[in-house]
Amino acid sequence: MSHGHRHDHGHHHHHGSTEVSSLPPALDMSVPDEELTPSQLSRRSMLRRTGLLGAGLAAGNALSGAGEAAASTGSLAAAHGSRSGGYLWLAGDHHIHTQYSNDGKYRVVDQVRHGARYGMDWLVITDHGNATHARIGVEKVNPDIREARAAYEGTLVFQGLEWNVPAAEHGTVFVHPGKNEVSVLKQFETDYDGAVKGATASTLANEALAIAGLTFLADQVRRRKVKDALMLANHPARKGIDSPHEMRAWRDATDPGHRIAVGMEGAPGHQAAGIAAPLGMGRARGIYDNNPSANSFPGYPLESYRTWGGFDWMTSTVGGLWDSLLAEGKPWWITANSDSHHVYADTAVRGGPDSDYTANGKHTDPVYGGKIDLTEGDYWPGYYSRTHVGATSFSYQAVMDGIRAGRIWVDHGRLISGLNAQLRSGSRAVTLGGALHVRRGSKVDLVVDISLANGPNWAGFVPTLARMDVIQGDVTGPVSDKDAFTTPDTKVVKSFEVNKSTGTVRLTYSLGHVDKPVYVRLRGTDGNRTAVGPMGAAVDPAGPALDVVGDADPWLDLWFYSNPMWVLPS
Image (cartoon, rainbow, N blue to C red; front, top):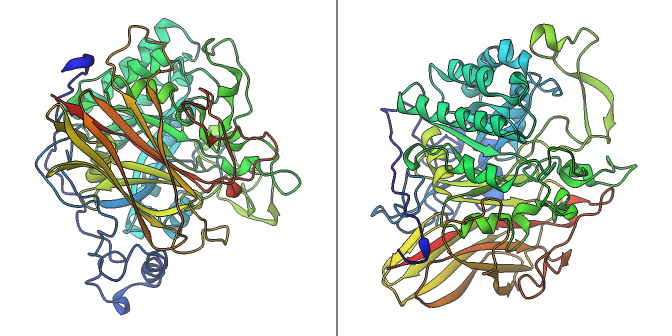
């Protein structure tokens, strides 16, 4: 392969899963409405209103992504497999807290109930890693999770935790459900959590402990203790302590067949925190209002500590850190999540003066507080942020496989209802996360079908997509400087004005005759706030604007982002 492109050929293994594989009743159109429970019927009605079920659409396959795809690998080079057809695009959230977090409040069932109400197909419970959680919380939360799985069969509920990554920020770690889910998470947290081990400082020894933790998880999968495990970096630029070389090390820590660290939050939670006082918290979107510390990577500019259109600087900067990772030709995906702790405009408060987290491993159940709380910065799962994963079935393993393969797009405020993006050359095609292998000089086209918003979002209005951008970059191979966070050959190559407000729109862009490895990714906006990107107008003439601390209403600045697709000529 020219240009130093690396082929990561591993395959992820399945181990005789007995998990759910059929559609939940609300999505299964062979089940008549009258046979549904009230909650199932409510969900089906919501899906119909948003255009995800209905006329001319195969059951559960409304927003299919046709094309060749690798169903279960972490590999770009293997992503041109022979299986073709559509995917179930399942919306979810991998960053959610409960009363089992020292700073949490809600029961597991509260978060799952609301997530199901707001259209979530899968959720990950990620209570904070700490000594108390490692000692008793990770075990005590499990029965609550199992009860929620039984009560909300239309929502897949994973158990995970929010890892204090040694020498770095936080990260979601979660495993496939099974008899060892608690024991594996407990051992992982006890042995490798930065807070538990006193290993939060940015030292080489602590960085090595993080790698050892990822290696441990890969070994648990290899030994079939759990069927699968994944790690995603949370709010990576918030404190500036996730250095570029650490992210590359996490990504490369395990072999492609058991890849554990696969990406990062492209947009953090806490999106309501930017609503101006007195109607809101009056802080920054994502609570991104920090400054450099002794543990921060010194190369990051001050603007990296803020969000841009609600997205993390690492993701929002065209030609920035995310693009520098993608230009190496290796997988690294983005997500968007709620980080839900305390919900904006909620009426619940933590229950009672006897709420002793240290002794009990949890706070007492929430109770009615008697007033609306406008001082919090979070939303319920699915209320504002969504991570859409292309899955081959409605199952835990299919969601994890879809995440590992990069079949992911994210949106805020239900800006769009669906996205089907493909790179095509002749009879060959790939969708998000895939790599299209072609002969050198082959003509390649990008074809994007967008389902526009078909109903109001949870703020009560129908959002409008004003523009979609195509971002393209060269694949230049592994970097010599592991702390590189820019790449010179990525830019916005095409912007489409969207002149429709309802229905679907097809946008096509020709990459021409491709003779070198490249990738493309997509970005869309409601057009309310734009600015020249940090790398200049020639790179990004109208990207997201720097969010104003204390006055950044998230509903007035909506974006969607897709993960990349590659073209690899030979």
